[in-house]
Length: 125
Image (cartoon, rainbow, N blue to C red):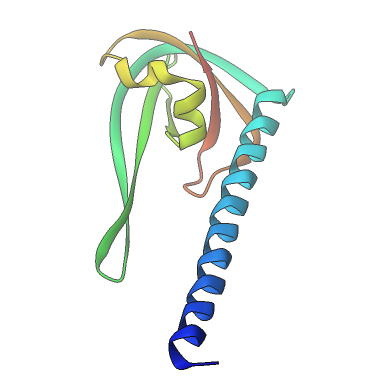
């Protein structure tokens, strides 16, 4: 096997492993969100939308990812923050058009927390 064909095989193997890892992690996150949607351990609150902020993850001195965080306040004045993961945004596209101080009810699952330590937002109305 020549050097260039060996490099091509190594690259192909690494590419396949990378795609497998990416799709495996994505499938896991989709499964976790579906579990949250089906969970009986959900809490509903009403209040208002406070703000959308962003969490920037950095590795090796550069920004790797930016994830939105949505913060709500219930009628008792307690603040609740939720990650705007791909799964949440896909299920709740209305998050992108919320206005500050807008009255809203929100629902979240308490079965697990995401990588940011937030419960999973499952519904807004």
